[in-house]
Length: 114
Length: 113
Image (cartoon, rainbow over all chains, first blue to last red; front, side, top):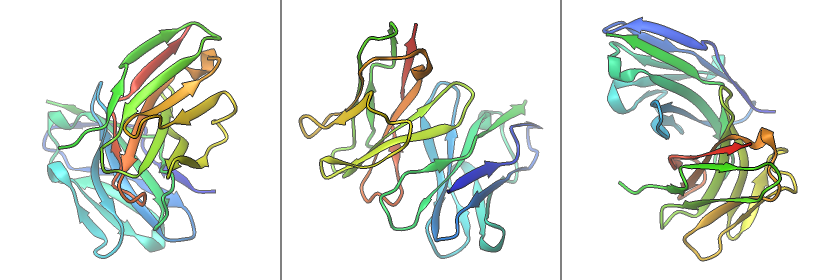
């Protein structure tokens, strides 16, 4: 069965620090990959997605993610975080080219200290 | 930007009661979903709906759950007899193609007492 694993449950950073959140998935076939963000009290918002092509994907708010197929990984990065990036971040996967469900990781809570 | 609208934002219900959670997906989207997030846990898939029928459902989506698209704009999730463990945030989502690009609603927080 597909599963998604996010390595860090809670990350605390100071403003301007660099961020990398790990995400690994287990699925042998071709997948679509997503990162969602959930700000406190708000709904899930899409940060970025990977379907095919360049494995380095740029998203909104200065985030990017790199798909490394050999490692089954899709880590999220940001060179310099801001206090407003405080939120919960979810990695998700679904099967390529199918109207399928999203499988979510357990989420990483990011706290950015001003 | 088009939004997925969910109502109510918060519902409190007594155990054993029926609840209906409502969603208005984006108008030209074809695929509809319900997910839930129990407090402190991951977001879990419940059901997907396409072409007026369920296309996939999880083991969570048992006989107590049903979905309906009654009028071409609303998409509802009904829980027939709520249990305490149904307390969660329920998210509706829709997509045009089904392979990704989901838009999520802001969620309904269901509290069963």
